[in-house]
Image 1: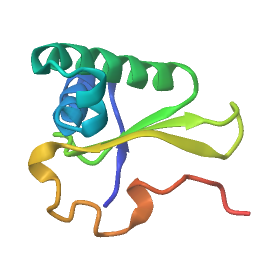
Image 2: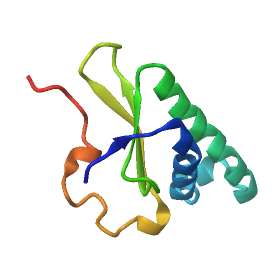
Image 3: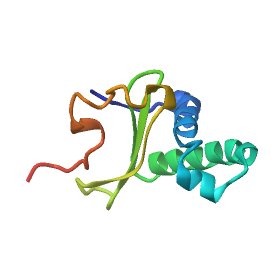
Length: 114
């Protein structure tokens, strides 16, 4: 699978993918047991996280235009070729369907060759 940087115009679609992927996640349910409140709060968190990454030297990568998968990366230090995976989600309708089977490029730590 190849990925592409998220455009600001696709931020809503990526937020929706993250929200659907984490809506029934045990940690999300524990933090916000009420599903109505969780449906309200999760998009706020994920939009903030992606905007933070994009503003402060991180990256948000998507699998495709829809997007079916989203990864948010933070730079360890600005200018350093080392990234930390902060968030990773596969939209719930596509989970378990082999979206990442073509290789680890989407989810592994990004690091410059030594």
